[in-house]
Length: 150
Image 1 (cartoon, helix red, strand yellow):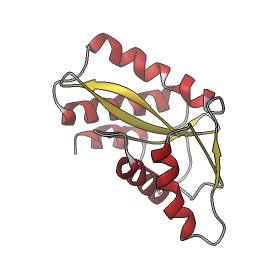
Image 2 (cartoon, one colour; image 1 turned 180 degrees about the vertical axis):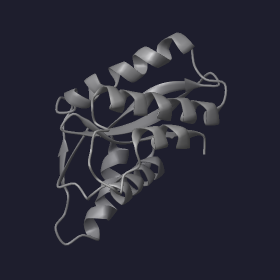
Image 3 (cartoon, one colour; image 1 turned 90 degrees about the horizontal axis):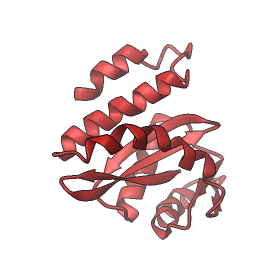
Image 4 (cartoon, rainbow, N blue to C red; image 1 turned 30 degrees about the vertical axis):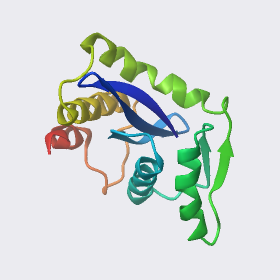
């Protein structure tokens, strides 16, 4: 799990993203990089996916503080790996999103940024071949793309 910076209304906002063996697990745009934002991201990610066995995070104290209450409630805690260099895969996975957003010179509204970043992330997932799953519970790539404006 890692976060990257996106410019909205001339201010930096934070795009939280997680990958699992080169597939995007979840992403969330937040205004702040703090414990509350990290907790919301982890709650959303765990609700949409299975609970991970291991989470690799950078040296951010907010991410660690958000994971500790989750581990307190679990019988088998999530293993937390905290290292500056273990997040290289996700740092490289930020590049396609940054490549699309850099020429835009930022977004005018937070809502517009959220919708466009969701679309960019879904298109990146389609390009990686990640949307080719046989699970009936997941919506199709087209349905996910059309639901972005909601």
